[in-house]
Amino acid sequence: AEETTQAAPLRFPEGFRWGAATAAYQIEGAATEDGRGPSIWDGFARRPGRVHGGHTGDVACDHYRRYREDVGLMRELGIGTYRFSIAWPRVKPDGTGPVNTRGLDFYDRLVDELLAAGIEPMATLYHWDLPLALEHGGRDGWGNRDTAAYFADYAAVTAARLGDRIGTWTTLNEPWCAAFLGYASGDHAPGRTDNRTAFRAAHHLMLGHGLAAQALRAAGVRELSLTLNLARISPADPADPHDRAAARHVDGVLNRIFLDPALRGEYPADMLALFDRFGATDAIHDGDLPTIATPIDLLGINYYQPALVKAQIGAPATPMYPGTEGVAFLPLPGPVTYMGWHIDPTGLSDLLLRLSHDYPGTPLMVTENGAAYYDEPDGDRVADPDRIAYLDGHLRAVHAALTAGADVRGYLAWSFLDNFEWAFGYDKRFGLVYVDYPTQRRIPKDSALWYRTLTRTNTL
Ligand code: GBH
Image (cartoon, rainbow, N blue to C red; front, side):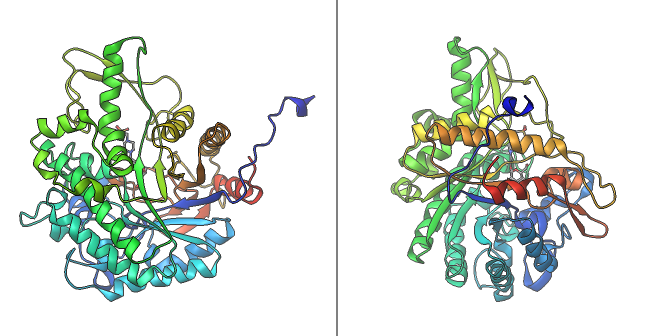
């Protein structure tokens, strides 16, 4: 009788890619090793009050020195695809100018180690660690158009060195965060609060994506992608046109502002109006949009939680979503993670189906999904049932989207290791693997063992 009430096992398609993700500044440490230059995050983390507990990425998971052990653990845990990022300030310490060969040597060793372990490397060129020299001295970081060209130069030299062994490349991770948390709300490095610069940064990031995509194509890379943080934005009352307009606005400044230029070669009219309102229209030059729309082979989606909004007269704009005066974000009912983020897997299935419908023809991959919980080891074990439930629920949502016709090629858990969670420092643990920072001991959590069974059987 028990058996008959159990849901049938869910099989994923043959060849579905399973793996986990990390990012350079969050795990590597070795901040001054082998000629690495400082990034905006080295600077930001040192500013009082910006990062929880004054934490920095100076040591992090010491992955720069422990990468062999870490790759060994990935192999044991059945990680098939490993998404990591390359630190621009290791490759070009000043952002532009001479290449630091010792920096590239690290990724060369890492990639060889991964390939020897039978793990597919997937490299992201920008996960927020802009070389500090490009921000300082009035150079204005992503507010400066030149940064896009420097990014493409860095992409070209990196692909020239590693393109023979890395098949899948991602230009940017989450340009929304880089532009709007970095330059509008100031929650992330470089910590600026200027909407005009934020919109210019958004455009220059996308121009950098397009120029780097062309450089990677010219280098003959096999698979090219862009990763966006996207979410379903719902109106509190779907029957209320004001609520619908509020949701549409947030959807614009989070989702469509990046999706439309990359996949349709145009900014939506309501986003052009925002560029205009904030005095950033002149950043968009003739010829930029075709560059930005350089075809990609895969769209990466990082999904954590949906949002619910309502039109509310007099509500101030939410700083990370410029122009949202009159829009209130409502708390969602139900459970949250240790980040306080609302848990709703339907947000992921709806998102995947919406992308399939609105932007057909580009294969999708979930490049990040996961949850922070308060984990505590008990001897050799870390029991994390809440994380298993989160992953299970979201994978059921991915499966539902697949069944409904979405072209989803893979799923990567965030994250392989506990790591430096940006403004939250080491307080928030997203890993499948627990890191005891004082000793750097790694302990696979129960979720890592659960995930191994899932990826081995391709069945949930
Ligand atoms: C990803 O960012 C990053 O790529 C990764 O480096 C990071 O460690 C991981 O997620 C976990 O955070 O709830 O008010 O902050 C995701 C960033 C998180 C930004 C959710 C938008 C919603 C607004 N996104 N956030 S709020």
